Structure formats: C-alpha cells, structure tokens
Image (cartoon, rainbow, N blue to C red):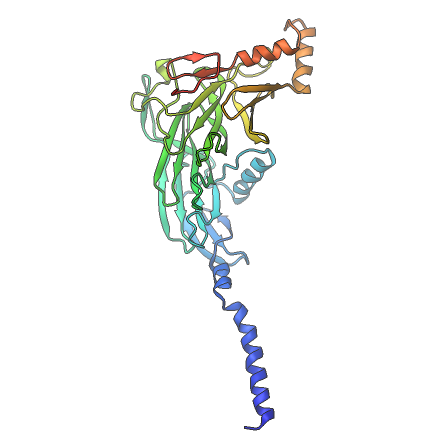
Length: 364
C-alpha cells in the first residue's frame, strides 16, 4: 500500500476513534443513565437525566398529586430559612454503588394518603418502600393510621460513606409524631415518637463517640412548649416523657432520648401568640455551640455540647414588643440580666423520672 494511502488510513481512523471514545466511556454512560431531575405529570413521576432525557416513570395512581412546582418550592423554602431540608424528593447515591437512587414521597392536595416513601434504583426498579405511622392508642383514644411524611433528609451517621434516611412523619389530625431512621437498604434503624410535631433537626457528634447525634426540635402538646430532643440513632426508640394519660401510649416504652428539654413561655408570647409554642429552628454554631430558637419569642438559647445553657440572646423585635406591652400596662418588669436569668431558670430537663430546673440527662 502506498505511504500516502497508509497515512490517510491512519488519520481517518484515528480521528474517528478520538471522536467516538469520549461518548463511549463508562463515565459518560453513567451520566446518560443516571437520574438527575424529575417532572410530575398528573399522577406520574417522570425521571430525567442531566440532559433532560426521560429515563423512566412511576405512576402513583394518585389523582390528587400536587404539582411539580410545589415539590421544588418546598425544598427551596427550607434552604432559604436555614432549616434542615425536609424534602419530598431526593436524588442521591445513598448506598455508594456509583449510581443515584431516587427517594420519593407522594404529596396530595388534601394531604391524605401521604404516608408512603419509595426508593428506586437508577433504572426505576423499586428497591423498597415504607409506610409511616401506624394504628395506635393514646390515652383513651384510638388513632387511625393516617400519617403524613412531612419530609426526609439524608446523613452519614456512622462515617462509612453510606447515607441513612431520616424521615419526619406526623398524624393527620392530632399530636402523635414519628421520627424514623432508615438504612440505605430500607432497614429500620430507629424510631422515636413525640407528643407534638417535629419542626427541624440538626446532626452533630456532640459526645465525640464517632456517631452523629440527632438534635430534633418541635413542640410538645401536653406542656404547650417548644422542645429540644437529643437522640442516638443506634439506640432510638420509645415515646416522649408525658405525665397526662391522654398523651401516653402503652404500646411504646419510655423514650431512649439522651436529653429532653422544654423551653419557657415568655410573658410577651403568652399575650400575643397562640397557647402552644414550637421551636422554629436549631443550628450548630462554631465553638461547639447549639442554638435553638422558639417560634414566637425568637429568643436564641445557646447550649454547650453537654446541653448546659450558656447564653440567651434577645433581639430587637422582642424588646420592642415587650416595651410596647409594658407601656400599655399589660406587662410589668424590666428587661435586664435578671430577666434573662429567669428565662434560663425556666428551662426544664427530663431526668428519667421528673422535670427538673437544672441540666440533667434522661438516663444518667
């Protein structure tokens, strides 16, 4: 074969080969087949790749499924408010197999039928599903199994690269609420029940034992106060400490929480706010500080990692409202250091037997 023909053959085949190879590598194949986003069309979930190509779909057979924008707005709202992102939908490689799994909890316009959580592999095969809640008796009342998945988030509790799923669920009509921890394979690791809604969570290894703790906040309906609960995902079961029979469930043992703290109501929010307070958010700050902020007073309570109170920070809005009510004669007293100390003294810790006004663990 003439040299010119050989050179032409090499050039053409090399150029063609270099063009094809980048689109035939395993990496690009994974990208093309990996879930990246989704659409909701009627009752159907549609999974797409990063280029917008449909990969697979799942028909929920739910006629009242909410629209796609409501799924995506919920996550954006949580991020903007510095809360834990309790999502209805997550695309993430939770089991470290190199492919993205899809976690999906259907949401409906009337909020009924929202107790399911599905996990699919990248091809659309259902790997597992769970139903939140259950039929239980609290006090004299028989509560139905109508529960909602408020949302879910993922965290690596044990440092092994695999992600656990934390699920926030609540009864449709009343106080029973459930926090679940699931393995990447859908196995139940732990669950904790509270007599009131969970509103936010943070994750931090506060005792330096190599496992991240759950710091959950919300409300307790019996005491009508905001609460902070510290849980170990390896030993997580039972029910919140309740004194009135109405809020107790004989089916659950006492909770295994490390700490359960109730927050005082202020004289301001007792006048201006609903009778039951709730925690707005919890944030882990620098220098081993845990900041919890009740919904109505907006006062920041700062704790160390042993859950001792170290500081209280009042803000302008609270001080302004306090002064206004004092001028109206509806409040007496002065905002000063003594006022802050009384708030600190108003914190209540469950010591496993009773509520006490000093730092105490639930099972010391």
